[in-house]
Length: 338
Ligand code: ASP
Image (cartoon, rainbow, N blue to C red; front, side):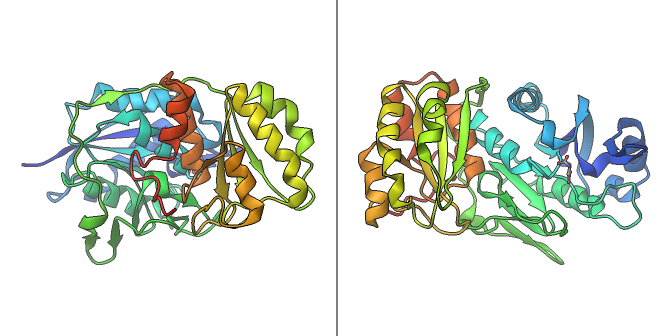
């Protein structure tokens, strides 16, 4: 039987048209353009409906409120559709895909994010193929997770990062293989897909938790971050060198992490290297972080770490449980290697 997919149009380049201030998202012209693509109504395509967010946004403006709104549309239509395609700007698509992967608890349907680098209104564009292929992928009942399809690769949403501002292959998944490669056929890698969830579908909405990301650099003066680390933020992601190393002068970071923890702030350590995993304690320069109470982000992307902190704090769990779950694999977002 033909599958029915809901397209959720949030904004982004894919549906933008030129205005005097540059490209902006447009609903009417985008719907007209969609209706003129005959292939979208071909016999081999699923049936589809479209629901647009109001207002349509450049994804730089997407935040917790919009994540809640997008996830709510999926939840409200969960039983009525076989799968979902979320059209989203590329700039923060990996954050939104990560957030929804956590928020849609026990999701067993394909939720496929896509967008484009060139709008559909242009003669040369990547929008048409990304949309058509995403619709076909969203009809695959073997997919039970939030994914990102772009430029011939189907990636796990919470493993993806945007790595090119210009190329049509703009996303990669440095620590997890693609879920499918798209060439002449769509070749799914079945063993890489998540299994179907057992429990009942539930939407966990997010709260506006104060979260911060600090990138370590040579010469960083950690004491300048004292007040935000110990008073303002609930969750902090520290992007360290290599496998989780901080400069020796960063010793002043360790009491800060301890004090932050006592104030109810969790510090998660990730790597500035897109590929590979944090291994706290492997070098002297990282063992102090572990002793001070920092959490290992293992091979999680910063995008996934940020979304996971929002998610776990929004569930109002006790601190010790949030700390434990940050280091557990909840939705295929991390591989524990040490
Ligand atoms: N600035 C745009 C956005 O993220 C870029 C894009 O869609 O490619 O909404």
